[in-house]
Figure: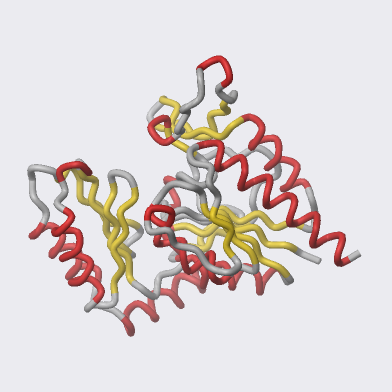
Length: 276
């Protein structure tokens, strides 16, 4: 049996300093491993225990570990995971499928054709974001891989009604809005992590799929997997979202990432015993 493990990254598997959620007394806080450096500064972490578990998981030849992220390819390639390098990675929310670090051109063409057919063009959405965003809380406006747009904002200053209005406007044009930390994403509805996961499963012959994620952009991935996990923080937790095949963890912060890797390993081992 080949088990595909597709995990979201930020605030699911890896955590910035602001997202660690270290609420325990300092002397019992978990030891951390830095897995990403940006502009010569440490940026993202896992617990050392989670890193060890991930290294063991990826050493199993029956497991295909697929990092699955809304990050661009350049942002993803800053991460240095412990263990065997992942042959496949899903970036740009499913818009880029990397094979040994190289974008798969056939997949990108398929994605482009579907977006052109099913939703409003990126430029229209980008211009609308620039027009309606308030300079009082907007810090940056970015395009990612010519596939979707996002804003970096001062979250506490963004009115909830503004976000609801943007969500309604986007939905009418075939787009989805997601708030993740200080970023507001506008992503074409057909651009999904689940579609890319299914493609990797087809190529690898995976007979079971496991997934994890914390945001609304991960819901389709969790629903498409045979079993999924979401941490006790993030958009999905805030909305009390779950599904029959999804385990809603109570743990939040970096310790949730550790619990998720442990769950992946336990479920992969269980499936392996069933197949034996």
